[in-house]
Image 1: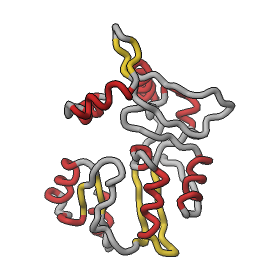
Image 2 (image 1 turned 30 degrees about the horizontal axis):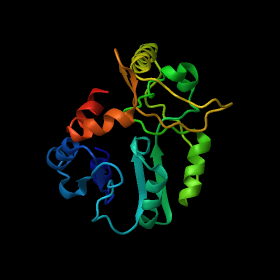
Image 3 (image 1 turned 30 degrees about the vertical axis):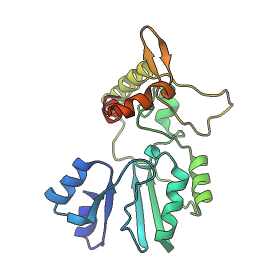
Length: 212
């Protein structure tokens, strides 16, 4: 819908998404046609036909799902001119909700969130990829009502129950990269190096991700 709204106010906007269902909805229901493309997983997340430079590039809830965030931003550099603005929306380890919930944080979801960022790591990510960090703005579009906080706490507790969080001892977290562990009732903790490949070969990896 962001692409549709941007085009409605005069922008020559295009978009990409990894979900075939969302792309079909955008192309057919919203009438965007070829303005929205479906891309693959991993590194193949930019369509080959993407060319030229853009005045603005947005990554809304994207960067935490990518296996190589630094490489992703570097891939965007050829599509930027001197005044291009890059907008990245993601969760923050410096947020008040992470400070309150810790390992029970709603966003601690190892199956889909591959990276977590703080203010420091985001600024460093921009620097290493050739961008200048201009500002940070907190998202207040969803007020932290008591019901919403209780729901987030409950979901975070469920994630904590299903997934084990591993971290090296440190005075302060600077970044985290979670991996899914299978807590088997008889065999104990089974690492992803054991079961992820079997799930991929069996064609069950997307089902596993959707379940998680």
